[in-house]
Length: 130
Image 1 (cartoon, rainbow, N blue to C red):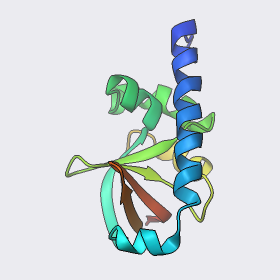
Image 2 (image 1 turned 120 degrees about the horizontal axis):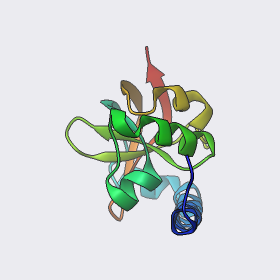
Image 3 (image 1 turned 90 degrees about the horizontal axis):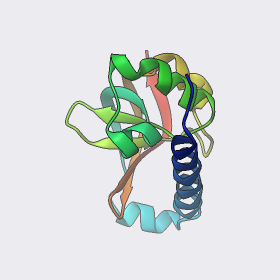
């Protein structure tokens, strides 16, 4: 797959945004997380790469190859739940890309703690339910 200069710039911009946002999320006060309604949940949905999904709405089987490349490259990975909500997936304060790349564009079930802030949904301490 060949990416255009515009696509590469968009990927870097989205990655920078993700790093900035994730830093503020991970540095958040645990008491504030509890106040925002953090709860354990099990969620079923499609594994997506958040850059292509956010930028162009790309998902599904026809996007699987690109999603695998993006996830393997370390770009943010998410879960588009069956109810339409999108979640950033994070392990125990570490990326889950290596574990999730094989599931790109596939429907799986994840469990973890849901935290939402300023319109961003995150499933942290996430685990794949097998």
